[in-house]
Structures are given as structure tokens and as C-alpha cells.
Amino acid sequence: MERMRKKKRRGGLIAILLCLAVGMTAILVSAATGEEPSVYLTVRQDEGEVVALIGLTAAEPVASVQLTLEYDDNLLEVKSTVFQKDYSGMLNAINTQQAGEVIFAAAAASGVEADGAVMEVTFLPKADAAGQSAVFSIKDAIVGDEEGNVLLEEGSASAQFIVSSSPNSGIQGGNDDQNTDIPGDSEENGDA
Image 1 (tube, rainbow, N blue to C red):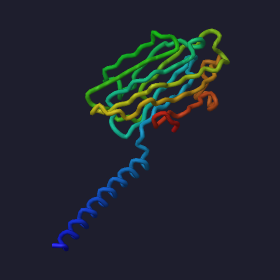
Image 2 (image 1 turned 60 degrees about the horizontal axis):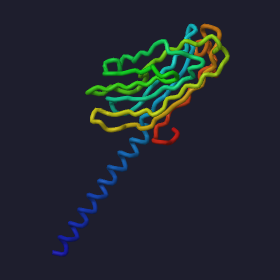
Image 3 (image 1 turned 180 degrees about the horizontal axis):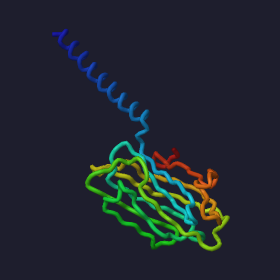
Image 4 (image 1 turned 90 degrees about the vertical axis):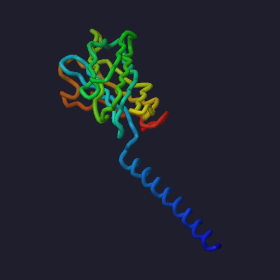
């Protein structure tokens, strides 16, 4: 009888250790593959227009995205907004009515692979914008999966850009200083 109890205890202990080992392996694999979602922002000038590209990376398919892009409305005005092809099939809403902000949200019943551009916002520089530093930032980014789970909450990113008077500057001009990309947060209230 005593032997049976010892075997059961060992069996239970082995099962617990096995579960812990499997769990730790999953955590280590998750950390090694960089599965934490993040948002990013890049800015360039193309033929006189300033283009902000908002991107997202996540290991799981994304079924909802909501965020605010802030920009300097003293230097720029929104010309157009375009969801990129993977996100264009989502039910979406874009609000450009508030000067200095582009608020957008998108949702779908099934998710899309999140590894690249979500949206492109094109701005027209105002008359006195040349040579001025325009700051862009993404704030309050929320990303969800197909089951309604929040993958990223309070994500953010920012970029600073010097508006050029020449029509083709920024990345096309080869001046990386013109396109300062600062990756977004991948953790809640923390820096990546």
C-alpha cells in the first residue's frame, strides 16, 4: 500500500514537472520568436507630399486595430488615407475631422497576418513647412485577435521628419536622417 502511494506521488510530481517544462518551453519559444505585437511608424517625402506609413507586427492573426496618429497641423494637412491590401477588407472607420489627429479603427470576423503596413496617410505640407521639423506619433494603439483577446494595449511609436522644399527628399534622397523611425512599444506602458 505504501509503495502505491509513493508511485502515485512520483507520478503526480513527474506530471507537474512535465507540465512546467512544456510551459517554460512555450514561454522561451515565444520570447525567442519575438511574438510580442508592436506598431511602427515610418515617414518619407515623395514628390512634395509627406507620407506616413503605419505598420504592425504580431505572431497571431489580427482581427481588430484601433489607434490615433498625431501630427503637426501647423505644418501639414491630411490629403488621403489608404488601408493597405491585407487590411482593406476589414470594416473600417477613419476620422480626420480633428486637426492634428487621424483616428482609425478596423475590425473583421477573421484575422489577417500582421507583418507589415496597415495604413498610409498622405499629407500636404503647408506653405511655411519647408525646413521645419514635423513630429508624428502613434498613441493608444489597441490590437485584438479573432477571439476578442487584446494582443497589444497602449502601443505607441513616433518619428520626426524635416519637411523639405524639394519635391523628392526623405528616403528617395538617401538621407536617412530625414526618416527617423523609432519602433513602437511592444509592452504595455514600456519601451521596446
